[in-house]
Image (tube, rainbow, N blue to C red):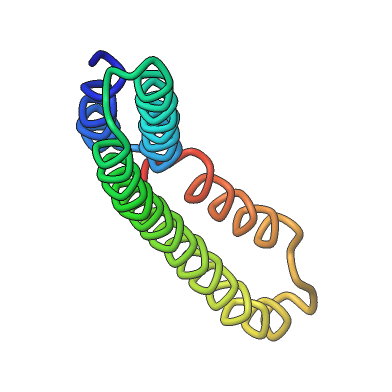
Length: 130
């Protein structure tokens, strides 16, 4: 029972977190609990606590839940990748926009300008919470 309760508990706990990394971590824990539950059901079948029909029904439900968890995980990953791509595009657009101005007014592209854009990109990707 604990493993089956743990599935939904970890989903709820994970979705309450603000970072994608933590959310994905709790989805993985939920998947592990789902596998643990299925293992315990197979043991219950081998010990004749449940019959073949009950095991098949549990397997079907387990498969459906696993697919849902996979869908949630993939959606979170896609959202995060869109965020990174958007951030990278905006940073590169700012860099490309300022380069001609720097060349025009200073006859060079200041290293500080390039480094600041890389720093902004790094902060937005790694230090912010998605």
